[in-house]
Length: 452
Image 1 (cartoon, rainbow, N blue to C red):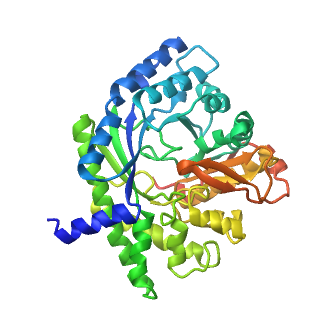
Image 2 (image 1 turned 135 degrees about the vertical axis):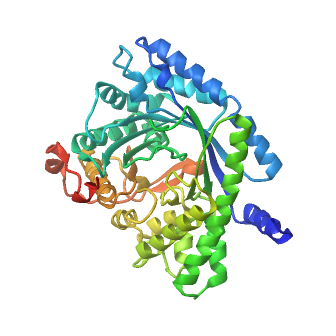
Image 3 (image 1 turned 45 degrees about the vertical axis):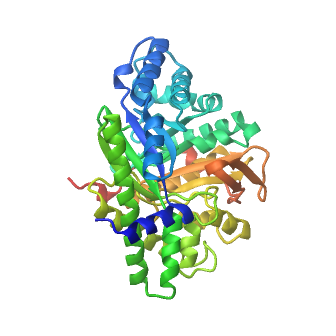
């Protein structure tokens, strides 16, 4: 039973410590929208999304008002569109992205994810058509997000897909050059992508998911940071226990909202994703949590160990709070979306190489990284390959969301605004990986993938 003290503490977490429900995401299967005529397929996609998600925003706003819990985003994820579009007798899948965007705008959501393909073991014709359409689709839409899974622990790394995605990212940046390559902020390249992730830009409704489902993403870096201020100079056992307790409280709040949204919408509850997703607002930073543990600046020696502790404690606390914790669940380190990370990059302490090391123990990977506009497609592919290798070898989800900003050089900054924040352009290694990427083929799965 909640005590008066519990209620007051929760209110303080919301008002002063940036605690919020980052997203309610409704997942929708589009498998029954397949049709040989792409215009009919697009219309079916639009109609079904609108029919299933028409009340998502109003229900979210009502829950927000009644419970007093901020719900920052309402989002939609759909079946990877490469699978739906494969039935179409058309080479260009951009009309399907336009239908998704139109539906998202009609429903009033912030983003819609699922203009996606899963190519970790190879391409189908639909996969190739979708990937080819990504640059134009992201340039012509407002809400659509795209993702491509290029590797899994079971399959290894599809290096042909890795090479292709380097070129696709470059094309996307060029087509959105007037917005500093903003299209790339809506494009993620995954290893071991999960089917129930509510967070953009990587959300899609997996093929093992039901017809519809409600997934909720909760975020509270500010709450964890505030809690750690009360255990200064205490041993790490105490730090871990403190984070676990806060993660438990945060997840319980997410479970409450998820179940209420599920009941009101008549859609099954899927998972609570407890990911410490930061924002550019002061006091809502994962980097500041790591610094509160005793680091002078995020990125210095000790940062990876601190992040490992944080990620593990968050997961342990969340699992105790709900039987259905899923998605990514842990700590995100998106540079442009975390004011502490931004400052650490500006100071030169946090580098791309250190971020790569941190991705071995965090929730996802190299996220919202800005690099010079003249970065080659092969270098981008090599960065993706490194990150995929970490995911495949460690049996975890990793990802790359990188922005080669046209016309920008090291030291410049990109300003996206809102949750996307601002990204300092980071230096990269100038040495070429062109011959490495040109090999193509597939990097085999690691020996520990053979678990049957």
